[in-house]
Length: 429
Image: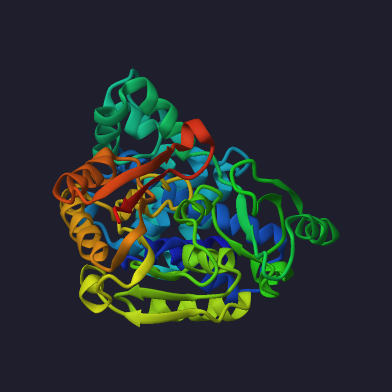
């Protein structure tokens, strides 16, 4: 039994059945297995690729299985999903290897009967691949299948941007994003970071969007990435780096980051403050607050105090106290699909319908903690106006003592970054 394919099948079972995040499932297995670089790359491609193409893979599977997929053993489905991904989306994998190894895994995981079923499904697909060809044309269904997006997401994008822009956006979601890091100016400069990266064989260039940003186009395993381990940098997309700069924190400020975990923007704020002043980092998950503490320690930051607090209650705890407030609100994440394949599986329309009300409640609650003349920044990593402009406009209409100073939206297919919305508001003095 092929160890790499078996490990990928285990990860896919956890992602599709147990709700595990793909990066967590992948990292967990990589820590326990002794894969060489080639096997590591193959394993990563199998896990992320199968996750990314999940809804389209299941559509293909349904053409060769004469019963609803939900009535099929989830372990068998995991084997079939990984097998189908190799057969239909990995040109360099021989079909015979995909079939034979999947059958062997099924035999070990589920028994002889399951292996015969898997063998039959895969061989039927191999004999008649056209049976599961995606529909032609530009219908939302065809576009969703061809670009590996759930249909409901494509419909939202068409409603927001129109069909032609949606085609470009969905295509951009399928481009592998580069690793982006933020230089820690408390410890080094971007020039020195680029020299450090060159020494360890990484290929990197400066971000044109963020002055501390570096785009790393090739690198080794992140768990051995010394600049990160030494706190010289922090993984963060260049679009996300614009948020702290929009807040414009100064040395000595009292800043509140209301939805802070895992702390990328919080630590960036601290670096811009030159580690002088005070930051309250609030979140509702204790385990995620621990990530902020660990990142702060690694980066050499000691001005961040973490608190377990619902962002809607921040104003009651710190009435009129803060110079600057960041509300990086919980959102659908539809701007970061290219980086988080799980969004295609885990999000649903009902959840998104509820988000604008929650976002407005958080923004309203947090605003009460701001001093006159202070700055309030609202940001998300989604690109839907209902979670962005609409929330800000509603807030401003009900709070005339605030004025909009600036806003910005970045789009994956236009700016070649993660999607992002940020609005800067000032409380009139």
